[in-house]
Image 1 (cartoon, rainbow, N blue to C red):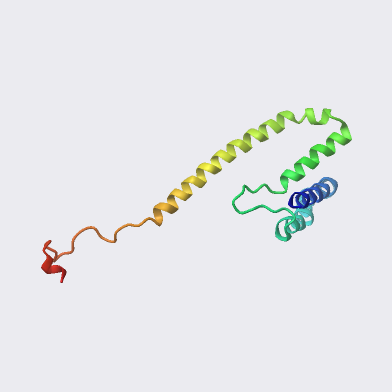
Image 2 (image 1 turned 90 degrees about the horizontal axis):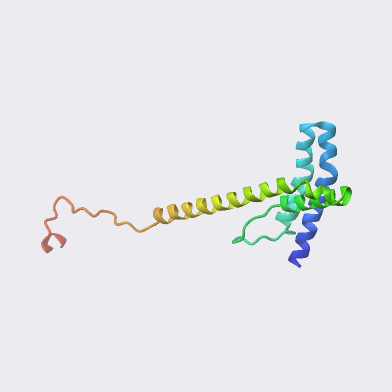
Length: 143
């Protein structure tokens, strides 16, 4: 059922973005793009993530609605313009995939470094390893 809910969430987000965003951006320019972001992405983020149509466990990578919106855009163009629309996007998609791989590797290194710093920060360290001023090493001073 989780998969079906995610498909519905991605579908609605992709449908709204592909049908409304260009109209607002063409009519109102940059302000239309911001309006579309507020009108479409805000409520869809609330529906998909806060209400929970798209369930992403805490220990998994977070793939936001952009994946669903991108797939909707690709298939919309294939349905409207034929398969040639897809073949013309292959260079761009390949660069996006390469960028995602590089970004994932960089994120892994950053996360590993942050965990290492946290471990060092919370590691046990003795308060003081040097003897005090009146310590001569004999047992009489310890009483």
